[in-house]
Image (tube, rainbow, N blue to C red; front, side, top):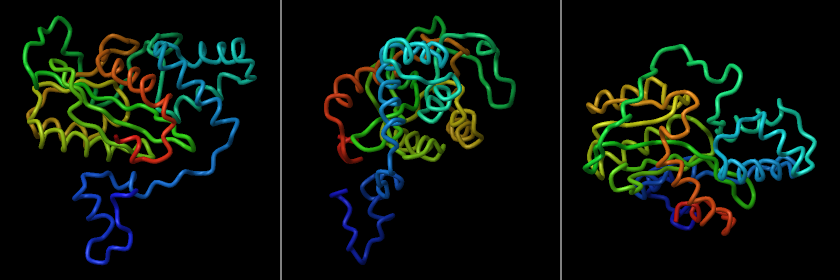
Length: 242
């Protein structure tokens, strides 16, 4: 990355990243060797999902086989989608059941009148393909202004970059009254829950199979991909951040 001086002796790369508000994983990112067939299939899955986020791995497998003539089974499609951090919204067999466990919260936004900034933020993670390889993006949107108040990039789905994005957004824009997310592992982790609770932020989570519960952030991801990502074919993390 051009903003980082790897020959600087007085400031470590980690400290430079902190001063520039960069996630460390994005600083050290190097495109991993890519299996061409896997990369092609994931590109197609990503494009289909951007237009039809309700498609689960069963429907996705069917489309890949019939429309793209890609011979792939459900197990492999499901694995790829998991690695990409995506899942279909439409509940199928066993998918509509609520996941039992700690750190699950009800959806608080139904029939809620949104009338001021910092009333509700939504957060989600998406897969961002690059010319060679990929990154994950976490983004936070304010429901009232529809402004992206924070985002971070990472080469893993670890919760760390999610926590960093929230902390930076709060520091810059203040605290939301409610934070909404899906029930992904990053958003049910103790660190995520404790961060929101310690800041007095109410926790809201999408219902299983509810496509419309977090629609504002999904619309942003869809626009970002079709209007930037798929057109520019970013080669570096710096290009993704712009």
